[in-house]
Length: 402
Image (tube, rainbow, N blue to C red; front, top):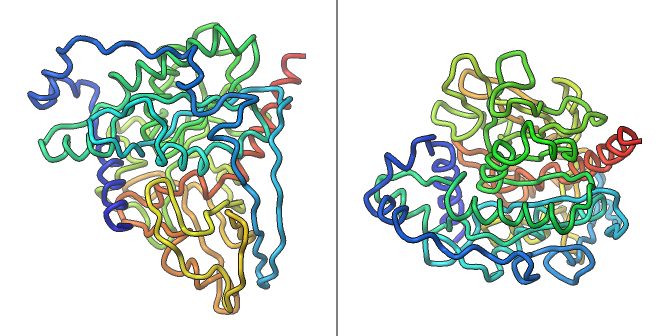
């Protein structure tokens, strides 16, 4: 089951990367026929059921995020987590490809897959911002497999899924935002949808002033060489300091022992005048290395897999929280090889470290495949860093408004 999930995710990532601007013209006859069909009925985002998360509800974001912190000497401590109902900013989240629905596009019912990915990637942001996470009719895992089998390419930054997110965003702005700052958060398919939303609805428009930051993970965002703005977005720069707002945080993670190969699915830009942006959430201000504050699922669950891991410590100790954290074990830096620019994840274990048995061949249960890296845990690897950055940016945004 794990191998199948990983292969699906690898295929998913490849289809993301390969989808061209004129993909509709290159699509299969079935896809062209679908595009010519009558437009589906828009979702009603005034209906609370169309949202996975909204402030003040008991919903997908209301989950147990208690964590066991495992020190290098094997000592276990407990870390609690509390949402902030009075957070000064909002977060708007679009989840990656996880739907197990059989049709090419998902329905609007929250299945275990959607609930799990919110738990993995978004709920913890509620300590720094009010959470908004719309359901949307995304391209499903089945839809991606069908596109691959037919020789076509999935278009993930437009179509039904994009229209849904755009409608949810517009509803949020009109009815919920009230002039507040907002962070948009996405991963994989969600990042592609949000990147297009930024281009169409935010970049260069008055609402850009409310953008605290855009966290677009597991994707490739192009920028001109030696510049931070002017590629994918005309007016929205790459973040280079926690005190900077209105900017983009982006990376795709790979192990230091398995750097991107020639057929990498992330971090490669075909335009010779452009490069893939990389922002290291552990050292945002430069090219240096920093410690990743990972939050990993105790039983090895990722956004698409449920395989159980080895013990987290040897000799094994019981862990009764849903999450584990391993301070000092992982660091990261933005790196470039002849194929790509990426977030290089380094494991600092040694035979004396009781945690090494769990991460010798993988990190948190996600066995890396060379051309897509640690895609399934892009967000988990730096969750603590990202949440802290949102808090710092919220303070900088408030100071700027004053």
